[in-house]
Image (cartoon, rainbow, N blue to C red):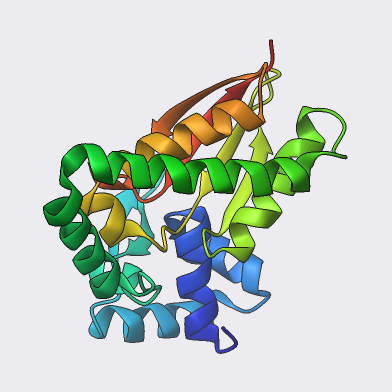
Length: 206
């Protein structure tokens, strides 16, 4: 994304709701320039505002993506994937579909394991994992919480339609992270399929 409007959409997608001041600081432009862009995006139905109070004075507007805004970051091959899932369920039954997911999980775990093999320490493994997931379209990042733990965030789900059709994919993803980051504890704290804007995992060192 290169235009100011696209940059705003990307920032809201990857970091969540933001004020004009926060967006202006990130983009290095004036608040007036950001205000013009958000008004145009709102007219297209891509962003909407809520209010946030910070200290005394009038509450400020905090902008976030609408469903149409999130749709600007599409689910790759969504319809084909869902059709294949339904066909697999009809052809092999639920147990057969579960076996297919387990086979995919095993192959993914092996590939990820190789990629993380030389990463020493939890932070290095998180960095490598976030890089891999970002290349796959998940817009992943990790951050320290300040109390010794970390949060691995995935700001986009390129297989959202598939995950909605078969939540075994989400279960397999959590199990994969738990295996790759062991002995750290990994738990999902945000889930797109439960209405969150992202999927996020709390990673607590042993």
